Length: 454
Image (cartoon, rainbow, N blue to C red; front, side, top):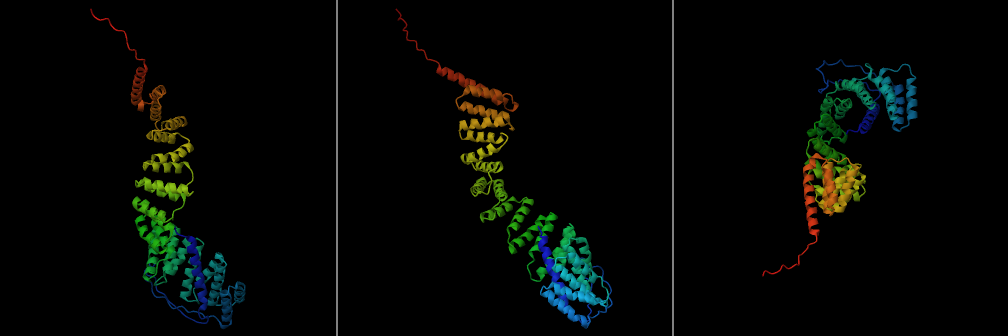
């Protein structure tokens, strides 16, 4: 559900912004910032205050070089920016802060060129400097390294750097919580991911902002992996409210299905169908199936009919069978014949031909019924051959072919389930044949007059 591509784009943008922002600082300034331990899930016990660190200054001769490199990078003139940095790198006496700015700058250039290995190597070099740069600068590099490692899908190592950064922050940003949550999610550590993602979203809400779409998506994905479907619903409702998209409604339908709430699932699908949001074959079949499950076969048949008319539903055995079943259940018997006949033609066994034959019997279409039942018996694969044989005998009897019917009923005697019924039919047909024979006999009237008594 989560989009790693969108997450990566956001991280790249954040890294570039932070990397470039470093060069806005007065390059000759000497400063010190000491941050206390974070009161977060990753915070450990309170540690003693650290001794202030001496921060070096960028020497005047190099300030102009950094400024030219920064201007070139802002203008996307990578060649000029690189040339200026190479001038600096050629010096053998760079102090720690000058080296830090040089590597940070190079890392930023590598990032603009999507060279993540190069960016990572340069950012790590800055992060490993413990003297001459402020702790704030070094700590920020921990975070940038974590972000690049995330882009490289090195989630375990990314977490290690993120934890180091987290310990230095009194109030980590929502994005920081989300980065750690995303890393745990990618490692399938959903229990660790959940509180971080929740905290990140809560911080965003506390600031009066609507949580980002990707963040809500991530939270929904965690609940899904944990099979906590009831907790997914409020998140999906927020996505539908703030970022209305078809796939979020479909996800709600999926959740209701997992919760065995077919009424709610059907309500969502039917609303989407009525608004013209469902157009694929699988979606149309889902709507029809839901209507059948909710005992609304008439609506199911309408959905299928429109699907065929619009060319969405392919002329397959499955679709014809589903359509005919919906019509049959809706008591649209005659209308069900055409799709059922098409389905039977496509079927390799005789089950649907048998069903078609029964449909013709219900409509007293005896000749069509006979043809269908014979095809069913020839194809085979029937659930109850004896019952189909009985049905054929009945049809033949209705077609006024009692001798043929009698032969068919005799064949039905082979099947134990229908032996009794077959015997009854045989007795009945023989009786009818005898009655018909009697009716056909010539009636002889004796015209002789007996002599009168004398």
